[in-house]
Length: 524
Image 1 (spheres, one colour):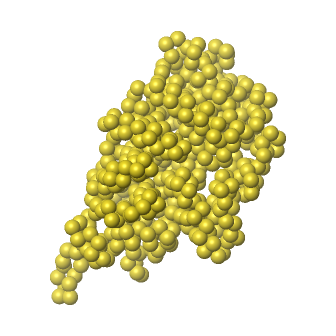
Image 2: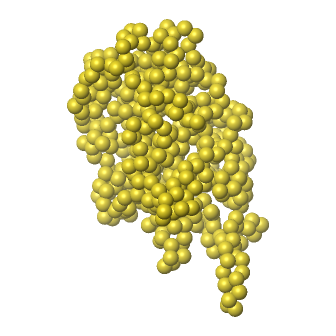
Image 3: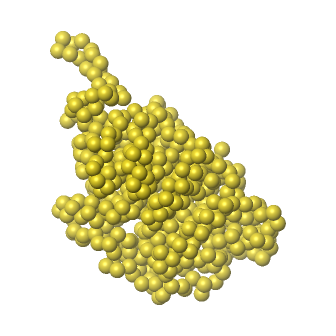
């Protein structure tokens, strides 16, 4: 049972403080109500139960933050997707021309309210007898994760490391992103690392997920040996492993509710030994906040599709015709199908290609006149299109860290440390688990750049539509060179080339008005 199910709806005592944060960062009308708890703010944080209530509030706002933003920040600006349809806001993300006036897209109230909630845990912990180190460690981990992502998205942002108690407290200058990383994110995740002892819980920060965060942060910062050490420590816990069958792989994501038109639906699975940390959406504290997975990738207007460029690259590496046998003579495809020969006799024939592409792609069929054409397929990694769920009741969990991601991050660290064979072995660890042909040294390339590009492609195929690709491109200085040719080819849009400045998102105009100490990011 996920941890949210252990609690009824939390009546957060610090109503006034949350109103302060929300009012500043949302510019919405807020009705101030008296706290429902009879305990005064000064005396509320006296037990671990009180700390837990505030921690759960932090997780709740973490969920609000990432329900849309996780994919908008981490995927939609990348080469994995093309816009298709008439959703102007979505298209603006795909084309990196976001409107600084769009409050629904750019408002940052939710992450700051999550930070304020965990700041209250951190502030109060020294005065709580026998403080629960797991609660405190999770508070530091949430704060580290949020500030890491805020800096990746906007660069320099305001920083609060204590709870906000008055409006005047939030009129502060933006802090340089490098300072935030070195003086908040890294110290916070190290403190969390020293406090957390529970090894694994998919829906809370634990030893495994804080080590995953460390690996990601250190790779981002170019601290490749530190990244490698953290990720190998996670591996050594033995809490997670790669799944080894296509069905197990699909079960990591599948949310197929049985309905009359689709009685074979297996219900919500999203389970398996690869899952390290996910954000849940099927518990009593959802409070009407549904997941965005269906609305972003499958339901409604056709606005986000698998890009032609990535499908062509995928099919070149894993061809869907007999070319497969020329490239991989020692590795038969995972699946077979039946066809009739010219005498009408059924015969078994191989089903060439990477089954992961078929598994995540709408219809999963490239046959002309039957399947969805290249550049037109939506994502069905989590759900068959509109089967059993709607955008209004979507309870699909968002997978943040899973073990395949860890293995491939280790490969990246090894490559950047000059350990080419170790990097190749890690890539083949994934290939073996997926029953796909092994990568040879010749395939991998003859220089660093070709090897890095090969590895990033492997990450794109394995982690497709999991909020990773844009960050992979930015971290490795590939965003501009990858995206500008694609943006130029989209002739029906106004082309604004990516630049180092425009990799960051614009700051919402309302935030600049609310806090005159802030300034707009350059070129926005």
